[in-house]
Length: 638
Image 1 (cartoon, rainbow, N blue to C red):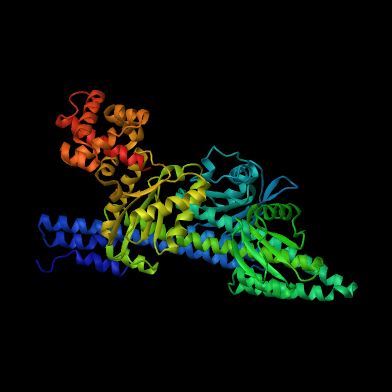
Image 2 (cartoon, rainbow, N blue to C red; image 1 turned 180 degrees about the vertical axis):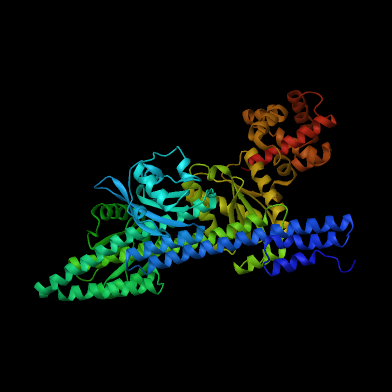
């Protein structure tokens, strides 16, 4: 029996990346050796787990390949020289990453009102490569017209599309069956379509659609960037011509050429916004501010005060409308834009008057700044997704490989064995629109990363894992800061501290129940921890959708007459009840605590009996009254 197969063999198969069919070998060998049923069952379970691990590793490998391809595409954009080379690279990557037989791209022809083949990879048919698709005809014409992705497992038999003889003949000559097409979009405008196709019937899965959409976004940026760079070259050519005829402008043309070379070199070597700002001031002189879309400072070179927010908004709007820099008093403004998206502004206070060529330098600097900000955001979003996936895995149940989770966390600079608190943010902060939800998640990711923590979206919540031991303080800080970002009250429930990956899931669920309890207590827009709410908070954390309505009804029915009596007459019946129950029903000790005579306590309790009924001190009624008093106190602290 010692020669029989064992579960360890599956680990060896995983280690050498064996094919899926090889995982049947140990089980077949065990059956041949006459292994008992228990052993066979154990091996079958081990095989099932091993195949799951293999599939997970394969998905991870695939994801790494996809991310690498997207990063390579961004690198191509950074070193953009020839649009055709970049588009061919994107189409080639689309074909490789999706494992497609053919990939191709069409662009819209606004003058003719149709769309034409621009780049192909893997195509063998000249007729197919010369196709032009009327808007709305075929799969590609429908994507170009609607601006939405379409996919078909068998194009020839798919009646959703308007088939034409020319298109079907070209597709047939190429032998294409399954086709996926996604729009190339600049802002809200569709400029073309990116495709992946196979010569056999197979559906494209959701992940493949998402990957092709990402590649299409990069292709659209490449096209728009090439147009802007062409404008740059044209501007420099105009300045060179002016240098020939107007000697007075020679120095400005030289500065423009030098600035262009410097900023190009900055992009190629991975420089930042600070480097661009320094380059502009060295060439043009003066001082410069680089601001983001919210008016926050990105870089400052030289002595220059930040303009008023209203002045910035007006000047940037004018710069975007005119498509160039604008002057307001002693300052020059250049909008930093990507397509229709506002990314910020450059504000220059020059030492001398700017001629036209100098304005072009500022405008090209704004263009380079837009590219750098886009690259930075792409990298930050990728890192944020990785950190969010780690937190999602940590708070999921059941927890999988804790050693692997610790290893992933260490690569992100997170020590899972340190104390952390979990903060859950209410649905109202993220339920408005998709863009608002993404803005909140982006803020949470940045907030947590800056503190050495993690953030993720889960089950309609935004969850933050923050280092430290003060759960209540962390919840209040998140509620306060996120309320400022969203412009609406944000409620945050917290729990912890938790130490070790196995404790985080339970801590998250406690934070979620704390959040529910805050809603039930009517404490919207506040932050608190489970420890601060005590047993009442844990009780209310289970009320679910009933929420504040049930709590209000309970308070009204139980101690409402007493609370109303105090409010109308300025008495202290509620305070007397709390003192009475707090000392175990002793009239003397309650009077001592309240600093009144025993007769006063007796009279007040008689009044309570008149308001609540003679049986208010019966054990079951007394328990309800004490619970209601506790709830009332928690609400009063809101």
